[in-house]
Length: 154
Image (cartoon, rainbow, N blue to C red; front, side, top):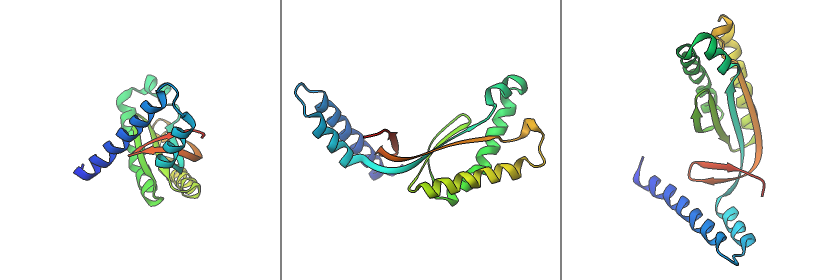
């Protein structure tokens, strides 16, 4: 990671930590500190969370190695959709992805493209080899610190 990028992420986290510590001080004006935090880090983003259906049950039936292959294939077919729709991958955890998009319309278009890509992929596959994608979408204010996003109402 380039030095300036590391400094920027660390500086953001340090600034947030300073404000949280100030918020905890006796007599702190928490509303004013909250407003500063939202001013510094608040943005509107579309948030997408994906998950593969029947993962746990399938692992029990077919074994983990089989599903490592399914995860690999799902990422191979989904990442191009994410790139084409300007998504930012924040986290990959097992069979799940956490992504953000600047607009709800880009996130929705990406989710539709992902479903179409999995439909085409699944066409000639056995049920055990199919990628069954679940997608959740949300849009609104989040706190974004470096490449970390915390979704929460104000």
